[in-house]
Length: 175
Image 1 (cartoon, rainbow, N blue to C red):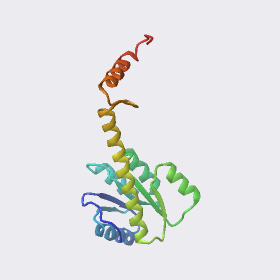
Image 2: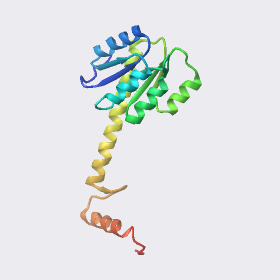
Image 3: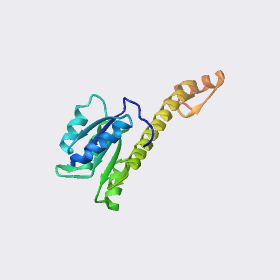
Image 4: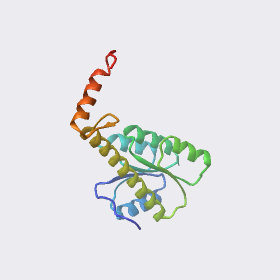
């Protein structure tokens, strides 16, 4: 297997096949995830709504008796745009994959799959989430430390000039 996830990293697994849910639970618990495994779309929607905070990661089957993994994807993304959703399917089509990605899926994995492949997909999802988070943090830091919006200034004279421009900008005055 691969790297070890932080102990607090929650993972929602959604699949109507009990044996697959059990295997995925074992694999990802061994990797350090806190796994919540549910048997279908309705249970997934309840888990997503009932969780005190959004699940950072969701693995869901695409086709289940009580609905579609696309419904799970939509609900997870509505709760948190940052949730990475991986869809599993035995009936992969290009149209399914395109629709899933258009709706915000992180990846689309065809059954049967190797456990190491799925672990690697979640590792990539976590790395992507970390990069996005770091990017947001650095942008906020740069804006508060050096800049006003998109402009960056280090000298006190330039900072005063930018502050003056920001105060004047909403007015109709010519400068």
